Image (cartoon, rainbow, N blue to C red; front, side):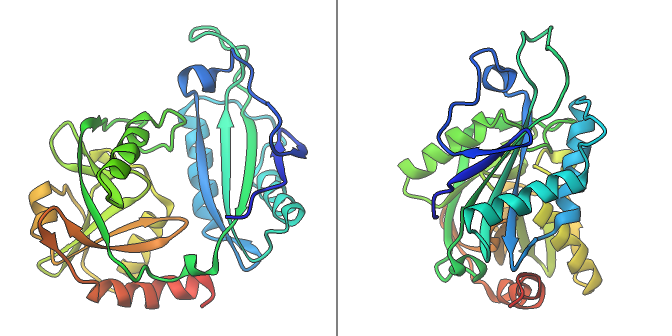
Amino acid sequence: MTAAVFLFNDGKFIRSGKHLIAPDNRSFRYGDGFFETMKWCGGKILLEQYHMDRLFRSLETLKFKPPHFFTTQYITDAIRQLVKKNGHHQLARIRLMIYRGEGGIYDPQNHFPHLLIQSWELDPANNLLNENGLEIDLYRPAIKSADDFSRIKSNNYLPYVMAAIWVKEQHLNDAVLLNAGGNIADATIANVFVVKNGFIKTPPLSDGPVAGVMRQYLIDQLRKLHYEVEEVSVSPDDLAGASEVFLTNAIYGIRWVKQFQQNQYTPQLVYGLHKDILLPLFGG
């Protein structure tokens, strides 16, 4: 990805590389905040309304108090200006971070949502379905919580960070995390879907996955196209017994899984989903 020259921080465009976070910053200390990862494609934010709906739900859940100017228009205008300043016109990854300011755990200075936005250029191949299937496995040291906060893309991302380190050590492509009930929550940077007995299944939000924007968009589109799709608990045995497995996120869309432990999969259905649902979204 091409390095960004500028970033947006609380209303100002500044050069990347400047130190912005104070030692007493609550996001640095406690992970007090959340982030959105969005895709800029063909002059627009893909699934913009999905992202903005999730962003403002997260603000409310985490008890931020945005000022009157902190609107969808304010945020999307900042993204468009940043992409233009960085020359990321066609295809880019956008990372938007919301964080509370300074203070101890019981005494925040205020609940103002500080806003940091960055952009990176993406390779055009990002819009294509992965030719080589992913190899994944279970990461057991971390247990994903399943509560009101588990669906938020929290700045406290430690379970996924450690899982990603483990993935590199094991020469894998991703790892699946379980909840306290032993069912699948999600992967390090993606939601999990399995195809089994003609049904497409994905863990419900009550099982602890991040409320992925691509996850919700895909569910909506699958139902419009009359696919049998269910939000139900998925166990490791379900994963092992599936005919296909794929992962979804806002940047890649869909990526097919070739192998989970000793189980092999093919991307027969995934090819059709990518062609019928994602390519029109990407403008292909």
